Image 1: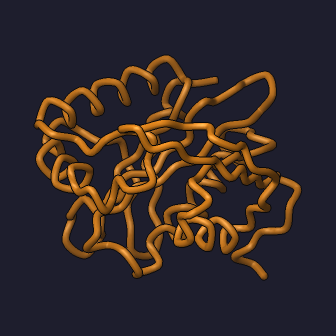
Image 2: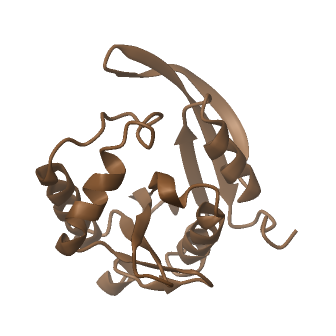
Image 3: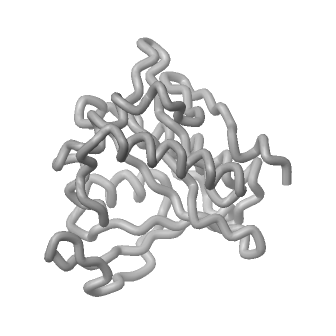
Length: 187
């Protein structure tokens, strides 16, 4: 599989999804240092610009190793970084990966997850040849649950007491979508 497949630029009506670059570090820190954005993540909010730089370097490294696709979500209208979306835990033999999103608060409620998500899902199915895409969320995160359901994911199970972050124990709800499932956006 060609390396370029792991560094795509994907355009939608309002968004450009492309690899994050070091110039995005400040914007990334602004998004992922927000405790509200990080509320349901299994990691603490970022604290320093080094956290953002480390994320960018790790993302580019994992894409170079062809284990993930990590893309910034940029608004076409302004070029502003609204967040990130990713396919990670890529398993080539099993043709599956996990999907994840993170958007800054100013981008919430505008339908960007659906738009970026469906574009990334189609990229995974059509360009990477995935058969299955999985998602794991905190079951209390109703916004993510609704977004996944709109994207055609089915809730497949609950893993109890899966994470502990800063002394808080949480469950994981598991979701999946198959390439053979009908597209949610088409319905």
